[in-house]
Length: 90
Length: 94
Image 1 (spheres, one colour):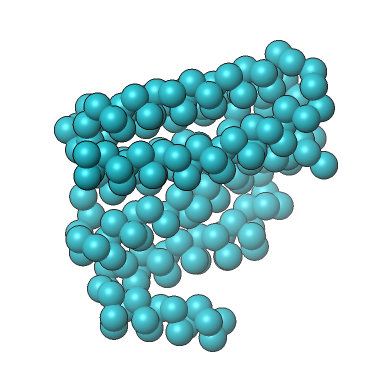
Image 2 (cartoon, each protein chain N blue to C red):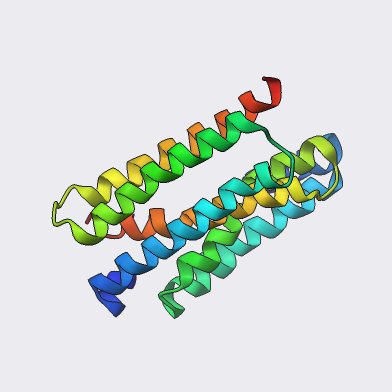
């Protein structure tokens, strides 16, 4: 709905801003002492991948990058929670 | 509706009441507030609807510990922050 009502550029900017916020929040479990180094590394690597996809969606012009971003977000959730679980046992 | 009722009964009596009420809150937030009202009201609907969509990690946390801890809230908020990027990307695919 947002691309229709407010245009392309604003939607992609919003997507990027929320990705930045998400990156910061994903580091919180390490900062609060709930998780260890393994989770920190995994969160940073996965977050960097998500940032790459968001930036590619914003400045690139490939028609497939939107679907790739969505697919990566599903993989991101799976891998992040898996890392959270594994970190508990390592 | 019957499946919702059955799920609620299972959660309240077999798991713990906090988890059951949180599930009911997220169900109402999604089915009634998001689908019935927000989808027609504002383009920011996915941000508010993402709040009830980000509940499942919190539901899992309360199912195990029975309390609301900061750890569960952090994971849930992480999920909440990821939702807009994902759904805004999805809105381009059609």
